[in-house]
Image 1 (cartoon, rainbow, N blue to C red):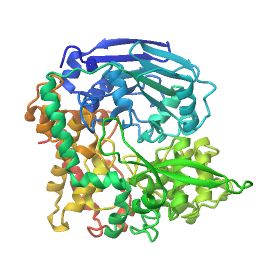
Image 2: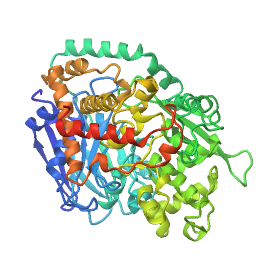
Image 3: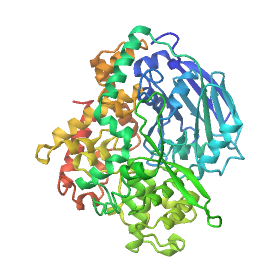
Length: 586
């Protein structure tokens, strides 16, 4: 690592004592690269084994890596913590500007300890940390919180604002942290942890230059990577249509979860597809810092005022494939305006959209089957496709308005254990499912991945590229294990996974050399496996075992493009994957 690189500087913040300090951890960074590698090492140091996620000792860690601020698509910050949602490893990545701002502020990682006695927000810059009273902001939605801090806290440099909404404040275990309005630390409850710590927001400001080992080599590599990314055909569609371009292909394939996965094709798919949003609602495209793709698509939704003709409120709402699946097909909403209105509510309350969409779908089916009644729902009658009722339910979940909504605020695993309906509670390892029912691969990813996220090993992609007769448990488990191990290196850089076709291990070794790291391809393979195993052991110490996980019966009942899935196949594959984790890849 270069001697003047800020990556080695770890900023420690104690919310209880309202103090901060910086430690230079050269060896820790050199051994773990940055991002996921560095964050997992810090989490291992900081998080005691036998604590509840609400304990003030539960740390929040943010980490960036050597590629941030220097290379295209290296736009992510990694957060890590003990998850309030599944009480295992909490890991979430967000784009936007936070990675660049943090590195330019002079830090490679931030460790937040303790718990404030009053609501506060933090300002992080190259001078350290300021602790600000946020009592006036407590209770505000995400958008108003961001607007207040933007206007009140002036200053130069590259800025990023991370904040929570009412769902995080009340401790909804799958609440998120929103950054730059349209990006999220979405999964596994970082928002709830902010809430427990009375931390409403963080403003990061950075403006220092970043060093490189050799400017000529760096420029040549940068230009080459930029060209290769521009020449990648699969990325062009994300600029034009956004990730919502996947709605129609997955619907045609019969892999789009619909009405709590009772079906896999949605009759209104063409109304909520990316092409329709681009044609009729697209307001603008945005990019994360240092990203040439600009996959963020923002819809402009005009809502007329009831008592003033020709006057409209215009809301700008981001949409992607996963949010549309969760607030569209999964809950039977086929109106593009309806999806946007639900998304706007989800964003402002500060929910993880995938989890809350699955929660609404489960609650709807539970109401249909009379597992819960209007007594529990406070007079509401949830029906698939009913936008108005879903918006009311979102507010009640955020407020945890009664025992039923407090149960929904803990996810479908918890709610179904209390009210019944486990067979259609679509969660894996305590995390609600993503928008794919493509075959065995995606559900093995859900069951085995470090985060129980579709992004861990991308089984959905393997399913779509592989014929059913070509899949067997050994081959599938090894393929997904290798992919997840590689992604540990990519997310230690920290690169967006959209760049994986360009950022192979050879390229990553070149990228790291620009920051003074010297890794061979074999070194990086070994590091990827070591990071993956460290995350697994963190979970194992807290009672996790892949082969003991519940497999929701619904995924076995609803036919996938690979036919009806067999439980024995899934269990065998998961067991092989578990052995690979135990043996460090075999």
